[in-house]
Image 1: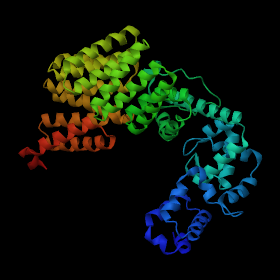
Image 2: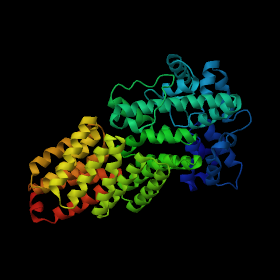
Image 3: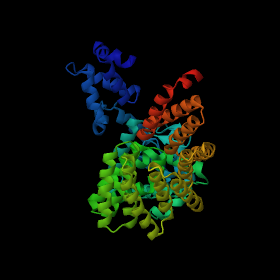
Length: 493
C-alpha cells in the first residue's frame, strides 16, 4: 500500500477500495505493484478503478504489467529458464489444472510421471518460488504465475499433449472420487457409474475419514473441472451426489448439477437429463424452494419415462412425494411413494426401497397413523442395516423416534434420536444433524424439560441457518417462539 501510494500520490487516497483491489490483482508482488502504479502515474486521466478494471481481465493481466525487459512476465521468464527440463514441463502442465490447488497425485496424472518423481519436482518448484504451499501436501500458484503457466502451456505444448494431460487428470479425479464414494456409501454403489481404474493409482483411501478428507479437499477442484468436458461432467455429478447432498454443499451441488443438466441436453440424453433434474430438485427441496423442486421432479419424471429409466422414474416420484408431504398433500404424497416403492422393488433397488419405506412412514405420521408410521420406519431401519446404509439407518432411527413421541413413548424416542444424532455426527451427515437436534428438543419438551428443549432447538437453528435448511430452520424458530412464551420456560432460564 505504501509503495503504491508513494508512486501514485493523492489519487490513491481518494479510492482506497480500488487500490486494495489493484494490490490483490497484483498478488502483492512488489514488482507488479510498482509497474501498475507507474502506469497509473503516467496516465492522469485514468482512475484507480479503471486500472483495476483492466487488471480484472486475466487474459491481459500480464500484458498490463509488462514494462519492456523489466515486466512481470520477463521476471517470470528469467526464473523459468533456471529450471530443469522436467521442472519446466511440470510447471507448464500445472497451468492446465482448472482448480485453485493441486496435490501430488493429480500432478502425477497430469504429467504422467511416477509419484516419487512428481513429489521431488513439486518440491523443487517450491524451492524455486514457482509454487507455494499453504497446506501440507497441496501446492498452489501465485495468481500471476498461474496465468504465466497457462500462457506457456498453450504456446509450448501441442494440442494433443494438452488433451492427453487433461484426460489423465479427469481419469484420476473420477477414479478417486468413485473410490471415495464406495468407502462412504457402499449401499448406493449400484447407482454410480462404473469407473475404470486409472493410472497412476488413486489416493489410498483406507477408511471413511480419509475418503471424506479427500472429497473435502478436492471439492472445489472437482466442480471447476466439470466445466471442461460434457461426459466428464455427467459422470462426476452422478458419482458425487450423495456426498454433496448429505454434507450440505448446496452451492457446489447446484453448480455441478446445473452443468450436468446442460451437458445432458447438449447430448440429447433424456436419462441423464432426468437424473440431473432430480438431483437439482432435491437441493431445491432441502433449501425450502418447494415449487422449484416440484417443477424439477415433474420434468425429471417426464424425461425418465421418455428414456424408460425406471430407477430415474422412482427417484423423481420419491421427490414428488416429498414435496407433496411438505405441502400438506399427504394423500398425493402417499400415492407417489407407493408408485416409487413398486418400481424400486421391481428393479431390485434395496437402497431405494429402504428410503421409500422411511418416507412412507413420514406420510403416515403426518396423517396421524402413528402405529403404521412406526412399523414402516422399523422396516426401513432393518433394511438399511442389512445393506449397510448408515445414512438410511440414521434417518430411519430419527423418524422412528418421532413416531414413538406421537405414540406417547418419549423415553424410547429419545434413545432413537440420540442414536441417529451419533451416526449423523460420526459420518459428517450435517443434513440430518439439525433434524435430530430438533427432534431431541421436541422429546425434551414432551418430558417437561423446557429449558433443554430451547437449548437443543437453538443448536438446531444455528446449524440449519448455516446449511440453508429452510424446513429445519422454520421448525426450530416456531418451537423456540412457542417455548419462550411458556411461563415455565421463563422461570427455568
